[in-house]
Image 1 (cartoon, rainbow, N blue to C red):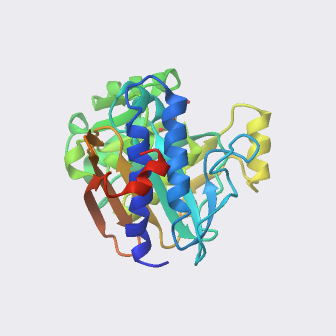
Image 2 (cartoon, rainbow, N blue to C red; image 1 turned 90 degrees about the horizontal axis):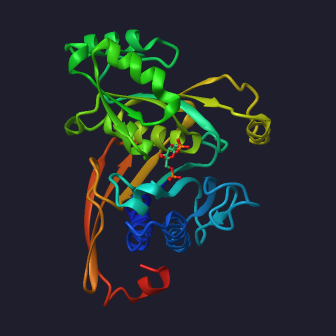
Length: 322
Ligand SMILES: O=P(O)(O)OC[C@H]1O[C@](O)(COP(=O)(O)O)[C@@H](O)[C@@H]1O
């Protein structure tokens, strides 16, 4: 993959963030998502790649744009793309924290073709012994092992979990062990990635969220050197059939990070609303500022890109709905 590609791709997530930011707090999730999708697709088609969306807005019959299998780009190397045009549609509609526009890229065949089901996930940041936590371990064992590795007490640890009824038992177990918790309303890519940020205050992420978001989080943690495991969860026969359509035979398989996102992976995200990882879009007359992160697994380089956009000069932005 071209090393410049990640830096080119930041234009794509910037465009999506600028477009959806117009709808922040407007209470319309669908419109915010659609704005991000339109802008992301247009901008993706300007990249010199022969891109295929492998994690996208859904299957072709349910997603008119950026559907799984859609070809994007104006020609170039064959690249698989995992994307979430707006990770946190509800967050954006409510003006809540951590909404962002996300893309990961790898050479063809390197992302798990995750169906649109749930995934049980566990993640920690870089610099810890391999296997320090494990999806199949109990909450108490994982916390004890992590505390030991970090040379701290369990009561010092902070666990990020999505605030959902399905996590009641997990939350109770964490509390019983004496660890602290940050409950998030949405946006578990940011939740998992926060484990890799020293200043985020998050030591461990666990719980079930979207499987496509699991692949995106794995791609991000491949870049940071963090650890991630996931297992698909199925609620009904239709979801099982979906998984089988994507060639998934072993439904109970625990996926290691390298099985979710392998090879040379790039991860790019632009903040829509303010969050622990990125500042959200600031709009003013004739322009806006954005903040993005650009990371690559091969080199481990992580960049923060602060951009000022001049809408008077970038007149093509009009067509993107920015
Ligand atoms: O809301 P649910 O059904 O618990 O799903 C959890 C998933 O939804 C999200 O919170 C937000 O997803 P959207 O980007 O589709 O709004 C994800 O981060 C998470 O993986």
